[in-house]
Length: 316
Image (tube, rainbow, N blue to C red; front, side, top):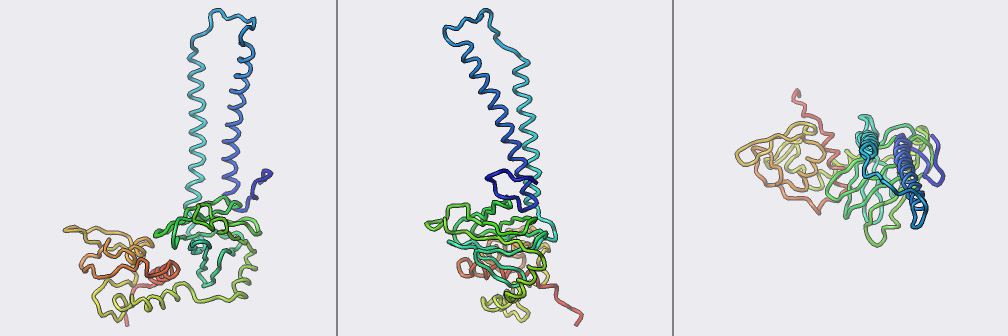
């Protein structure tokens, strides 16, 4: 699709949709502004003081004009709202087969971790034509991941995981910015997103050296932070088992009642950082908080390891 001069190029599947809504709203604004400005100038000149015009029996009201002035802008506003809402939900509901990349914002850099183990700082290499899902968190203050060419901007928050996704449609190198003031060196917190042909991307992964997967690194960290002492196969303390827990309902004790929550990424994260906030039914709240102890990068890897643990094989 066309690119308006001075606008960033359209390099994702959502870019043209976002631009279409923007220019439609801009067109509506210009149209009504022109009408109002023209009438203001015309009637200001025609009925200026001392002009010879018929001022007898001026109309006091016209319900047709008032109704049109209410109904027409209302319909146009509802159309713009509905159109933008569809695009909004499309931008925040990634496809199930999206390629997942983990991003950690830190004063003043972006740390990127690919599932294959490859790490980057202030750069993100991705393959062309494949939807990419970013799972992002901050190590310190609020940041905002902004790639103008993709028309995406998502706040990155400490203590929470936020997501964004895009489908790159054009090979190239595109600016990455932090769009939320985050301290004295905020202006230097930028980088590049490089979209590559799938074959070139695979070659880049191979030539740059693939490290261990995030789940494999998380398994080592699981032992290093002594998680295995309570939750491992040879546990010595009575604690909930983690095999196959991801995506399953977990009973949570709340006074004399029990409720169930799904063990998703947010639940696992909160259980590590705020273990006493959701105590599994039948267990004592003995686990200490790891908030401020485990860096964000390590936390992401431990979560990936827990998600990768399948149900225990009981046939052996």
